[in-house]
Length: 249
Image (cartoon, rainbow, N blue to C red; front, side):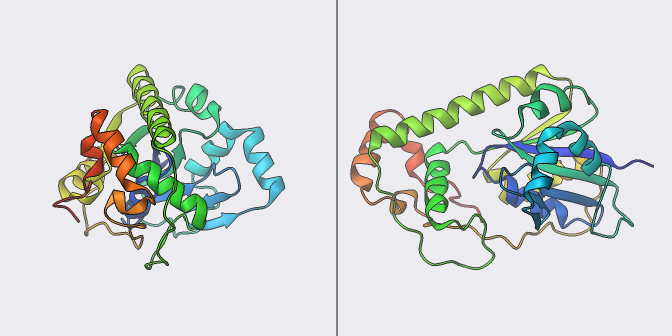
């Protein structure tokens, strides 16, 4: 019987990798990684940086995705796996959004959105400096971000507009879609909803070895927090200054 398939879709630093690793911890789910990373093929942590392999992937992304979601080269023992998925980001091959997903209406989509764009921007800015994209142990303190409030705001606007376009695109296609927020990834009920959406039974608590990077308080990530806090508070985004996981894990 063919494996049922799904994709996780969202923006960078929105929690997609955390969800991917949690779903992959389920014995009946194999969630391949960020297969369309521009610099590598990340297959659930098995990274291929061979240039010819990347070119072959990008020359025919739809065929590549078909083969990956059919289980080609799957390292984990296939016994017991019922559902297979992968993670794609907004900036990956346009063929995936223009052709691949709409032409496969049975393909399930889990859409991850991080509403706090200031936190998302700060995460992106820090890992761009450290080059530590994921961590399983607490790394050295992340460098502070020295940025003008206007530029930070412009980057947050870009992220919001991308979310707007992605949400409207998802509403225009026939595929089943489940939307999870960043905060949902730390809520058992939301993770159960994801398992229900994929048609698998919970056998154990989903888990991930990944830990949150960066300072917990968003303003502690900036070298000039005062002007940035004042700018966002004045422009109606004061809620972004708060701990986005307050009361959660």
